Amino acid sequence: MAFENGIIDLRSDTVTHPTKEMRQAMALAEVGDDVYEEDPTINHLEERAAEVTGKEDALFVASGTMGNLIAILVHCHRGDEAVMGHLGHTFLHEAGGMSALGGVFPHVIQNQEDGTLSLDDVRNAFREEDVHHPVSRLVIVENTQNACGGIPISAEYMHSLRQIVGELGLRLHLDGARIFNAAIAQGVEASELTRDVDSVMFCLSKGLCSPVGSMLCGSKDFIYQARRARKQLGGGMRQAGVLAAAGLISINTMTYRLGEDHTRAAELAVGLDGTPGIEFDKGMPQTNMVFLQLKSDVKKSPAQIESELADMGILIGQSGPRNFRLVTHYWIHDEDISKTIQGFRNVMND
Ligand SMILES: *Cc1c(COP(=O)(O)O)cnc(C)c1O
Image (cartoon, rainbow, N blue to C red):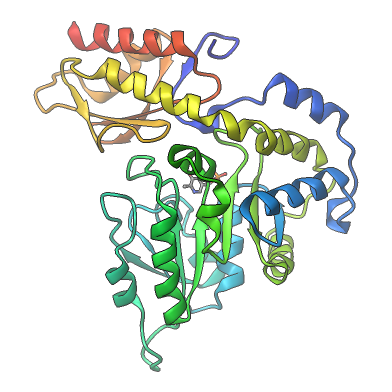
């Protein structure tokens, strides 16, 4: 079906428009002043978010970046260090907010090919109490791990990581922007993947189709402090129940359909397999992201390929100098998958 204008937009799942049902719910939403905690729709959304992640409480925030930043600000003092992967969104794509606004020192270790941080690396990253050292405070992991291929990470791994983090006296934050993709891909409840963390952020505005917003979840005390940090960042919103109304639909219905996006990503990959000049980067898709790489003998530039596809109404993302990322979502249907496969064949064959 693509969008009304017929464009097949595979650049990201952030491009999703709200559904018709969301727009109706938004128009009718009961609202109040959320800084006074009097918006009934937001209060309801926060209860649901806490419930699905198995945490005591939750906070509606403007974006995933704001949710991660607030978590870091609450867990860490100025000068503390946070351990994270070199391919983590918090390290790559959040404008250094933890340092700029929190004085937090990022301690970067390598993501493994399977998206995880090796348990030994986490242990070795920890620094003993010593006046020369920053205070090790926090570990951040991401699920699904976006830049490693949209890889889902298991509850067993999270459990082993928790044990080490616990032994070292650190805290654990999960960047779960796409935690429901990770859950569906593994046939588990999201709460199994969040059980072992102190805090988790997930996005309503990606594959779950809400126009705006993310949820930060944790203990009552953590969320109390997060509410103050959100206010400090200027993120206290007023009658934002119009946004929360869409968020409720995201949690209550959109989480269950993400498997369709994974199936379509797999179909797209199978259809593209063997197209001249391209090969898979990061293996076959495990969730909603297909990563491609141009072979070295391809004469056309990545920009030219992108623009020829755009002329056919197919938008793809660039994930490296000769790498593309194609992301399936609610607005990508079966016929869009076949058109994209055909589009690639045309562009790569001539
Ligand atoms: C998109 C994303 C975020 C940030 O969300 P925004 O709403 O774009 O700020 C954080 N982490 C991951 C893994 C993401 O994919």
